[in-house]
Length: 285
Ligand SMILES: *[C@@H]1O[C@H](CO)[C@@H](O)[C@H](O)[C@H]1NC(C)=O
Image (tube, rainbow, N blue to C red; front, side):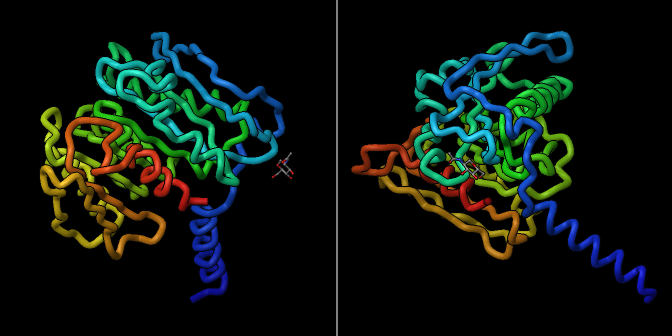
């Protein structure tokens, strides 16, 4: 093998490795910004769109942050997610956890057309691309640490992002989702967390498992049949898939409960969703 061929292979390996691990500061790093919650309007394919950002009080514009999108369910709104209404915790309960971490996070609640995420012709993915450009132009984000979560229709939108934008996002948390926003691409692995209630009467748990299994396969994990939490048990059953590509784990939680973004286990005063989804995201640095 020629020396330059070996050098090219070594360089390729190095670049591939670095793609995943290096901090890539966004253009907004170094620009001072006030903390707080702000609504933004933008136009995508001729339609006006809205999203709400939350910049933490301890925001440091020299330090690249995680960027976390949080998509609402059908009939909800960005405001419901931001304010913690209609069954949502404020920004899905993530800011207090993220802000206690040294990397920190910017939270984003986007607003769906007709209160949903039909993603017709990929227009909601185009909206995501535009939000990333706008947010990262003014805020300091590590471009290798973009995440998405969402509930119900918003979980389906998060799945659509996993399918179409696996290279732009580090990981997703799909909370009670189904195949409702499409799945173009489906070619690349992405770190995947899913949770679903065994008694979900709106979106059966089989739908959540179907989404999950797309990434069990793409991430190279060993397939397995997961246990469901028994109805009435007040428990959750958490499965870490084995033998996944180490950069792309899959975590799955089946819980005793229905269609909710804030399920609790028996005796718990708080939902496990924020801490479990945050534990999944924060492993990526
Ligand atoms: C802001 O972040 C930079 C880069 O990580 C760090 O050097 C600096 O000490 C931080 N400033 C404050 C006030 O924490």
